[in-house]
Length: 156
Length: 227
Image (tube, rainbow over all chains, first blue to last red; front, side, top):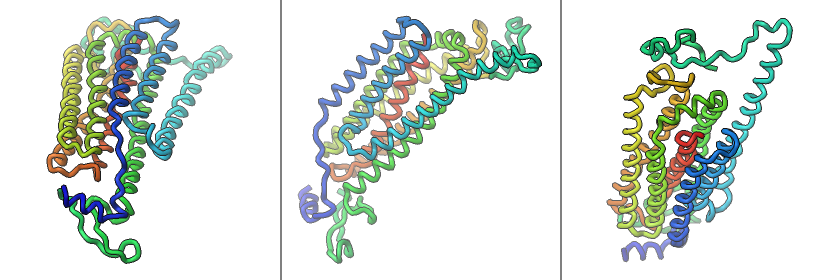
């Protein structure tokens, strides 16, 4: 070790050490907060907030708080300079674009299909195929379960 | 210590000074090298986030189209096992961050202890996952055309299991990969390669492990707590 220390002193340029502070208290605080939020997530799933969608959004909001804690403290973004945060947030931005634009598409498509089917001469436009109970080989062993349903329908 | 300085000439206007073994030639300082490695790791993590976001998007689309099938199908998952696995992964993230800090403070024994704990917790997660998978395979609760559960009530339940197996499967592969890297870190730590001067691999593995934990934070409510 003494050799190493001597070496360190002999290196003015390469010897820069990043000063590491003891963050143990922060980490313990973070893990406790994560446990509490996990408990809240489980509890929130037992409460009916009005609709499936609202419940899903609440669960995702809590998960996002948890994820933020992990990123800020465990992944050190709180103590770091901007570049890594910019890189990370850019991915969050593009994920948001992916989600939002796909949902704009998916949720407006139903209306267009409905409108199209009421138009005259639109009889060839059919709605989404009814989804079967089983597909492929899995359909065969269950007798009677899908007698009137297509067994190999393409799922929309 | 293997990183005993060796004299290298030609840097900084002909000065002759020592050069730690871990410092690559194209970096001026160890700190610069560390920051560059870290930025590279964050870029990799971005690609991981985008990989998983595709799966999440698929889940959201199918879930919004077939909400009843998803609610019915998720009852076959054991909520308690999911919760235990969540807690296991959260603790493993904590032990990982403590391993990184111990390495940064040259506390080799603590680093080893935390790395072993993290690996054990990753293993625990996979063992629980294994029993969950075993149960589902036994019941025929499988993806797509393999779905053969005899008492299916709502059409399209197999869609849920397609998403379940794909998402937890890709996540599980990441856990196994993380455990392999941690095993390598343990090997290197035993050799005494990491200290406050150089612990980049420990730090980067920590970032990866936290990301895998972060993905599970979203997977748990989506798969186990659909309401």
